[in-house]
Image (cartoon, rainbow, N blue to C red; front, side, top):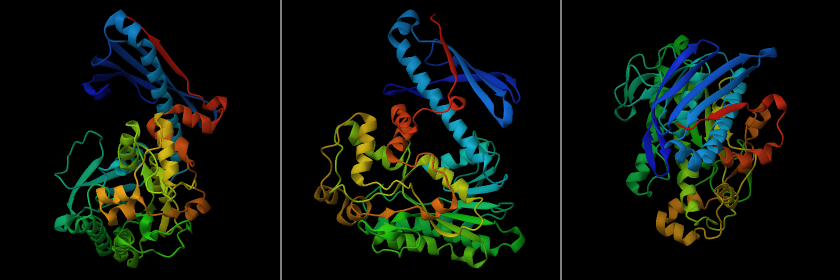
Length: 435
């Protein structure tokens, strides 16, 4: 592994040992940043299908006694935060899987991005057989143990057997609309990266014998389908909007029609801004925030549909078992937020002011008018009507704790959650030793 220590990355080599199936295992550091490290994971069955996860860690800070004096308190605090996060996520993931569908074979196109990586890991550890569609040579022994199959949507190359035994196809393909100025060439790339893979998959699904076809195609889409609509609440029943992004979404969703015509259930997941610490808008906004440059973007009163990464993954999982749902589904949080709200929540998490910001004119100079107007300054008050009515449960339905969770700021999550029931509290045993 590689672990960040300040501004540098330090290699950490560990080995697993003492494995007792269904009950636990241990790992220890061979080389790495600690003086020593042994971590024992134990799983103890309780009543009514519950079990207790107990982590016992024995470690020594680097540099012996000096390291213990200088770093001991900080290490203990970081470990407490780390394992709080791990236990909370484990519990939440298991709760989702407990109410999810039986194991399926799920193929994911576009699995290398922030959403795809998280979704593949979540589904595979929940008992589903996951297949990654990759554009390079398929690795027959991938490190995550998830099957890979090669395809080439740019060259319309779909190998025989790509969709063999697949129950569900999830298509997340699409270049990041914020990764470069919208030149004519860039616009063509953005369209091709979405429409071509979707069309190829839909046509391939439709060409299969009916008994071999997947039961579901979930096609990623965007909440910008509705265009710039000011303060108007927008549900899946709202009319489409105008502008480049709305047109792009229209073409993107239309590319899935061959699968729909073949009788396949097709869901267009109209994603809001997905907040994840490893990429996307949250990571982009965090840098100026840490530099003290956060503040209103334009007026800051425009609505930005958003959803936390864990809830985005949960929504895709939820759609697997909702046989009555088809067509557009707004994948965003029920807590509508403006740009000022989003920037303010990130600034609160980072303990930074949010007063400088980015005037609309400056945004148009930096990004180009069309890109700035549609991606930063437009107002899309999308509401997740279908998810709400279908019984989906958000883990972080409100903005501040969602940002806090993704950035590991426990105080924001605890403020929203209040006091947890005793049976849900994390039990963490740590013991620090000096060399």
